[in-house]
Amino acid sequence: MGKEGDSEAGTTGAASGSPPPPSVAARAHLLVLGLLLAVMAVSLVPLLIRRDWASAAFVAGIMAVCLLPACSRRLSVEIPSEVELLAVLFVFASLFLGEVHHWYERYWWWDAALHTTSGLLLGMLGFIIVYVLNEDAAVDLHMRPAFVALFAFFFAVGLGAIWEVFEFAMDEWFGTNMQPATATDPSGLTDTMQDLIVDAIGAAVVSVWGWRYLRRPHRQRIDSWAARFIARHPRLFGD
View 1 (cartoon, one colour):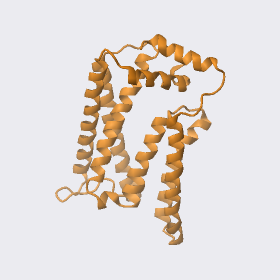
View 2 (tube, one colour; view 1 turned 30 degrees about the vertical axis):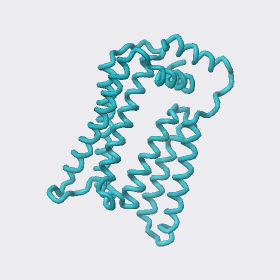
View 3 (tube, helix red, strand yellow; view 1 turned 45 degrees about the vertical axis):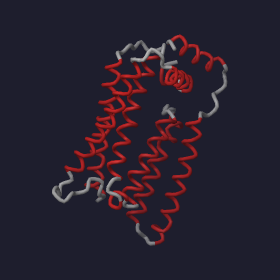
View 4 (tube, one colour; view 1 turned 120 degrees about the horizontal axis):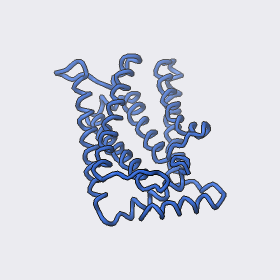
């Protein structure tokens, strides 16, 4: 698929004059958000009954964070539904399950699984961002496969590092245990480095896959997805 096909797809959507129907990702995001908010609301009730105000405020804060992407539409901020869905799921898994329900302590593998998954997803997100820009006719951008892969890798690792700063701030300001001590390292530095390493491994896997994918002569699957993505989010690309 060439950039002309992308342009035609965007023009067809704009010429219809009516907003496109909600995508599968948008419907999935709303459904998952509703379910997760219901689960957190159920957990919030006993905390209020026990007058555990600190834990109740923490759960309420997680619920507010999960609602932020949905509220962005009222501010005319365009966030793709796919990104919103992944963000909500990660916040729920890391903060609600990990901290409120102590899954970090109950399951030794929970932290590593989350960071490995986040490395894969963030690497894929970075790859898709540059790939869509590279394929959009409205953006004068032409990058080699190696650069796209490198961007995806450093994008994922950079956001992983920002998340570690967030974990440190939560531990310092709110007394959480997102960077737990180990038997040989009471400072939590070992946990931070292990998280960054698995982030980098996940990002590297996606980056190598993306590099090999871009070198293929036929790329119909992601090309067709990119065209639909551009058509659904024209404001992100200046159309």
